[in-house]
Length: 92
Image (cartoon, rainbow, N blue to C red; front, side, top):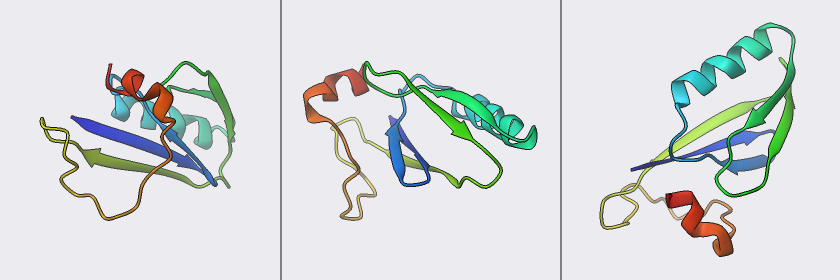
């Protein structure tokens, strides 16, 4: 399984595991090329998050592979923000 985190500026968002990352990146790129706009971020969990993206806003996708036993195969010691009381929804 792969977990993907999107960072916009200084805000990090854990994306749902069922998100088509290539399509979402294409949507973001089209929005930026059109001069910017508001996009819905498909976050894991129950909260809806909308963000204004513009050509001057840095966007970073981080992909982390999680093995079947739950071990993080490339863990480097940093821990992304995860609201632990909603953790089960990230794996659904």
